[in-house]
Image (cartoon, rainbow, N blue to C red; front, side):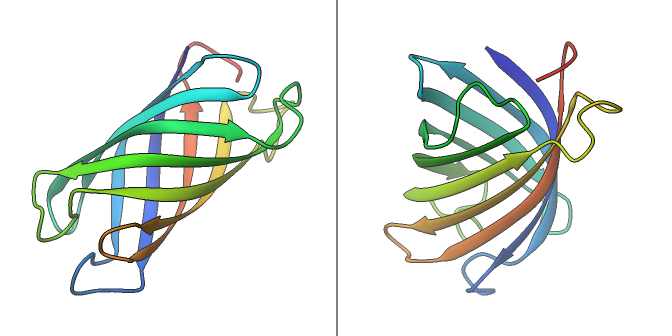
Length: 137
């Protein structure tokens, strides 16, 4: 399993349903087989003051042996302490993760994620950083 501390900027196409925010939190991932992983996270929104969590699965579509770059497609269920700001729903996502300086900072990963809510049809973009707990990715 992998454990990560992270920070995200979040932008959405619906400021009424899901206002943009900056979040701090953590992620976990567990590989079930070569390309399939179970993923989860919990984040706190600093401006809107909410706690959100997500859990689901992700399929890696790039070389799984390359720890410096990956693209995954997934489906996650989202919950929140404030459903008016972050509704409960399933969302499809695509995530890109890459190590900007793998030799100097092997624990740092930059992520770009696009997510689309299946109930609200709200699209969100996450840009953030992850620090692997326990060393390199």
